[in-house]
Every structure is written in C-alpha cells, then in structure tokens.
Image (tube, rainbow, N blue to C red; front, side, top):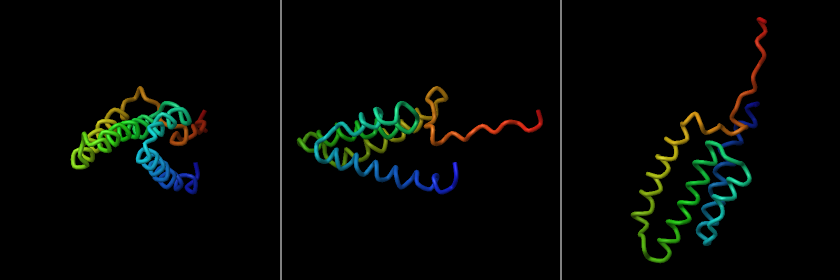
Length: 108
C-alpha cells in the first residue's frame, strides 16, 4: 500500500468516529452495527464498532438522567482499553487494508 493511501486511514477513521458520535447523540444506535455490516469482523471493527455500540447505550443512559457525563467518559476509556487488549488476539483478523502484500522470495 503506498504512503498516500496509508495517510488516509487516520482522517477516514476520525470522520467515521465523528459520524458515529453524531448518530449516537441523535439517538441512533446503529452506527456500530453498521460498521460490522460494512467492514466485516476484524480488529478495527471490533474496537470501533463495539465502542460505538457501548457509547450509544451510555449516551442513552446519560440522556435519560441515569448516568452522568463524569461517569460515562471514564467508562468509555476503560472499554476502549479493554477492546484494544482483546484486539491483540491472533484469532481476530487484521483489516484487509492493513495487511501487507506477500512478496515472493526471489532466492527460490
């Protein structure tokens, strides 16, 4: 993958998170599920999709007065850390755009 495409990953991810955050704020809890449907099951969707689903649930609790922002944010940070630890598992595939192409060995 050339450097121009790699440099797009972070901005696209930030925009995706922003869209998910906006949808969550508007009361739409499907952003995380859509991430799984669009991108499939991999390390990135495990972290981002699950975090969006948890954020949607916590946002709903906050909007109904059952949870304060002072509690919601630390919970999200903890969940993010746990998800990042889980994503390190070798059983969860990396996204296709992260995998480097295999170059045949020229010595054979």
